[in-house]
Image: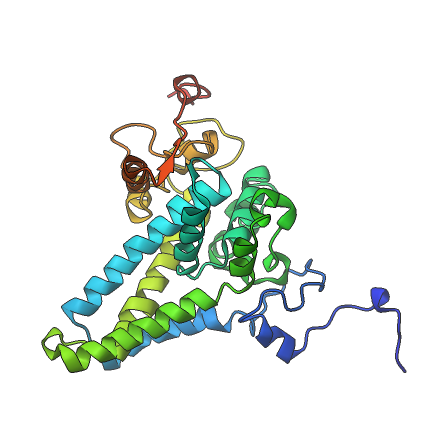
Length: 318
């Protein structure tokens, strides 16, 4: 017997609909998203990238492959920290619409969803930091959940469009957010094609399509994943506190080195509106140095500083 009153039925998701979400985040957009159950089928590509690292056993290594992996780690780390985080989430500087789109393209290559999704969930994090509603608080939900569990659930799959109205008015950003798998697939395909070409045209480099795919995409992406995910988990668990923020954010110098400045997390939660997270010259903030270089070229402007009065406020007495 069928029941036409859909509002009283629990939502079900078919395998086909779930698979469509690999390429189209708009699939099942009307499905209620309160469940904290991990969507194992939908997150299969995430695990596949990790599994791809095992391929190093067969493809080996070369200086070329390691150089490509390191370069893509650095470029995509800046794309996440400087563009997804400090631009899209916090609007700490200005740029042109064309550069905004380029920043979104680079950020999407980091395989951490689209710019609107990323910015919306991060804005929610700051509004509810380490409270029960904070999706990735290690204090509320445990370390592993804050590190990788939270974004695998239906509850956090959809973009919180109500929090990114300033960004959602751009159709090109909405398109990229909906089809955020396109850029990672293009990157993976390009790496394989370049490696295959080099294998035949420059064999002295000792690389191949499969090798560049494993090192340049899989290994580089997995290291990038867990470095940036550590800001959610480790940076709210381990390190020192300069400021009396209402959360458990920490400053961690070695995490700041790995994440190009994001480890100065207690600084950031004290004043999220600054383009600079290393508040003092000795607090290394590579992302800020890159933004300063871009500002010198005129590609970005109005980098928001940390006002001295705010930098000196709410300090924890030692």
